[in-house]
Every structure is written in C-alpha cells, then in structure tokens.
Length: 435
Ligand SMILES: [Zn+2]
Ligand SMILES: [Zn+2]
Image (cartoon, rainbow, N blue to C red; front, side):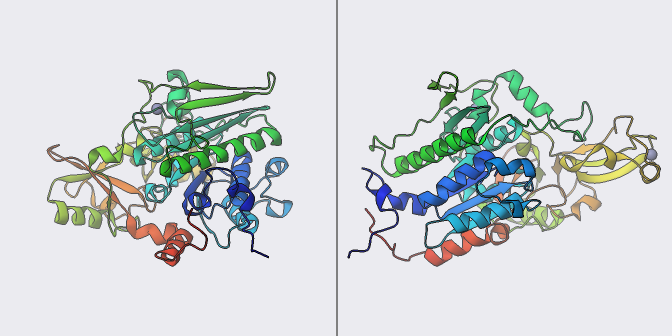
C-alpha cells in the first residue's frame, strides 16, 4: 500500500501547499488562552519552526482554557510548558521551538523576530499589542493580532508594509494614551506596583474560535507570499474582523492608517539592518569604540527608537530617596524600577514607604566622549538592551543617516533550536514532493 502522508487531508484542499507551512518561522507572542489555541492549531497543521515569547508562569486560572498546560505545570514558566507540549503535539518529524521568557516590550531582541516570517500576537494588554504592531512595521513582518472578551473575539491582520494599517491604527488617540499610561507612575519613572493587568472576562470557546481564525489567516498570508493569484488563500490585511456572540455575526471593517499612530516607519527606509558579531554582553565602551573604528568618529548609541510605543526604556542614573529625599545612585534601566527600588538603604531597612517622586535623571544617549566611565564599563544588557537586539547609532552632527546594527553575536544563545535546525536542513532536499 502506498504510504500516505500525515498531512494528506489538508493537502487535498485545492491550492494548499504543505511546504509553505514546513518552511515558515512563526513568532507567537503570549501563551495564555489564545496563545495556547494558536500553538495547538499550528502544531497539528505541521508548523515546524516556532519562537514563543511570554513572561509569566502557569497559574491555576490558566488551566480552564489552556490545552497545552496541565496541573503538573502550575508554577512553571509558560514558555517552557508550552514548548514541551508543542513538541509532543507536533505532527512534524522534527521541530525547532525556541523560547524567550521576558516582557516582550523590554526583553525581546529584534534580531529574533527578524528571523521569523510572521508574528501572531496573543497578549492581553494594549501596550504589548502596540509594541508588537510596531515591531511588525519596523521589521517589515506581517502581524496577526488576536483579541478576546466575553464570548466575542477579534482578528486583525497587518501586512509588513509600513504604509498599511497596523493594530495601533485600530485604536483611538485616547486608547493609545491609556495604553502608554499603563507603564508610568504619574510623573515619576517607576512602574506601578499594581498594574491593572486588564484581566478579561472570557471562556475557552472564544479563545478556541479566535486561535483557529488566527492560524487560518496565518496560513493564507504565508500562501499568498508565494502564490498571490491563489483566491482561496487570499489574506485580508488591514481588515478588523469582529465576532459578536449575541448576533452570531462576523463583521469586517477596513482600517485606514491613523495620523496619531506612531508605528509607521521601517528599517528598510534607513538602509536596513547590518548584522555584526556584537553581543549584548559586550561592554558599552567597547561597542562604541568598534563603531568608531568601522564608521568613523561622532556616533552615539540611542535608546529612543525603542521608546516609540512604550516610553520606559531610558537609563536612570541618579535620583532622590522617595521617602527621605537623600540623593541615591540608581544606574538601572527605567523599566526595571519599582517604587520600592528608589528608597535609600536606611529607609528600605526601616520599611519606609515611598512618598515623593524620585526626581530621577534619565539618559537616552551614550557616547565615548559624553558618557561617564561607570556606564561605559557596563554591558549593553545592563543598560537594558535585550540580547540579539538591533541597536541604533546616531550621528551627533546629523550629517550621516543612523546605523542600525544587529547584535548577531547573540543569535545562537537566543535561538539555539532554530539556528541548529536551519544548519541541519540547509541544502538538504525536502522529504516530500515540492508541489
Ligand atoms: Zn498604525
Ligand atoms: Zn531615604
């Protein structure tokens, strides 16, 4: 009897090509309700190359809606439990699943996302959704956003083209401001201790619907790239699809680019990204010296591009104790600071509560001449730059266009499985008919 391929049934769909799925690298951000459903559908459709990002651990309230997690996973990192379950469910002969355990807005290196063909955004707060939408445009990668509330759900597919709408364009100016406000503590630099997490009321069914719709849209987008004439697999970029459970209706709205959306620029406009052998573990002073030796004098490293939709990536040097007002050294990235971190040692020992703003000094740019030695001696990671990120260097005289250098020296550390998989399959003949 002729050997039947495991993907036989889906390959019977006219125009369907399994190779599109086999070859795609997909980045799934958030492994909660929708993230679980997205990953489940991907594993069973045969997606082999996946990058999963999430900052949380598995909690009891996740279990009623997360097919990848069991009671034994309680307390584990979501990315670890999800990656393990993905490999178990996967129908592919082999798969490469890499994990990033970090807050996406501050800990996801852009180099890792650049290695992906598509992003599926399954997070539950607007700040991270905005940041992910920004990454898609910046890197020119399509991004599908999934949202759920009660029994309803939404899907928004953005193309990688910066001149077309992104998730940020679906939001009003007021919603943008509210999303950004989430990270700030009134007029100070610290994070709110009790961030309103936006825990949505919802049930497994809406996540299951939305996850399936998102993966179907992903399959369409990936097919469309190699076969734009295929009508069955025509994606709907720039269209917000909303399912209302009360009316049992699916409605779609075309979204136009909004003036207040700050996500519409891309590296390609500035000559693209240059891979380097630099790493976030390198000393800032050494990185600046390397840039000077290769590109001439007069460059400064800037944190500003990373602040478009988040605004909390400055480096904080000095401030005042929030209880007694005594000057204190801080020397940490702003996003890592909570109220209690800005107390002097004495006040912290006394258990004093923060009462005043810290009056902290923030640094956005670093140069060999203008930055104090103490900071030049720190690694890029210590000033808040994630591994495998793309760093921005600006000409201090503004004569030359900015440089965008990728910390490619971190690639193997950040994407061990995907890097190994690519090496193994490079040049190897595909095991099935390339239709
Ligand atoms: Zn936009
Ligand atoms: Zn104090």
